[in-house]
Amino acid sequence: MKHVMEALRKREAEEKLPVIRMEIDYELVTLHDAMVACDEEQIKRSKKKLSELRKQLIEWSS
Image (cartoon, rainbow, N blue to C red; front, side):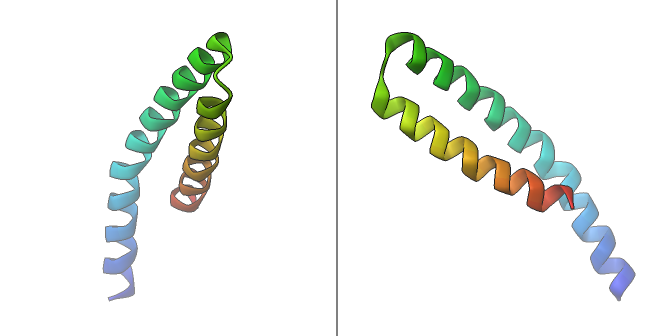
């Protein structure tokens, strides 16, 4: 049973990681645009979102 659970977790991670990476890429573009526009509120939101995505990436990578 343990091997089945590990296999399911690995498959789920293989599906989740590319999605998280795409979200990070998108949020980095959003952050760049906000920095160019000097939009402090969007910069804060993007940094917060990137921090959350980073945590997800670390969680699913291990």
